[in-house]
Length: 120
Image (cartoon, rainbow, N blue to C red; front, top):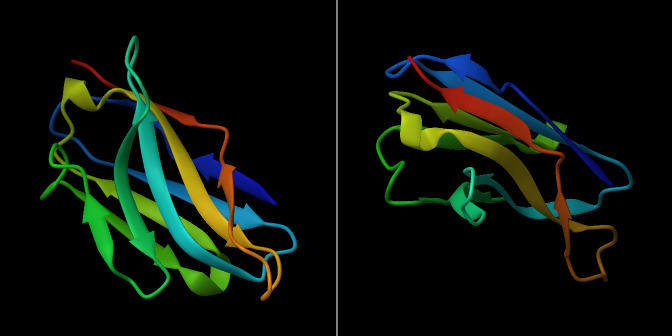
């Protein structure tokens, strides 16, 4: 299973970005998909997550600004980021809890990371 993230870049404060992450391989189902980020000198933190049924949760710091969504048919998760500020700068990693078969428990997979820089 591979997770391919894209959409990062350099933006000014107040602008928006949309991240995408597509999972590929021998996938039976994906229970949870999410986004984490790691700012320079800090630990990786959870940003947002979405389960297969559509329920979501967000870090307090991004509530009201970020929206996570997924396309189950494409095994893809998105993160719409609005009103970005410099504190949102970091490498964003996608994460997925993937079942390779109905009888197997989920395994945890990570994407390669995409850099988001918010600076004037």
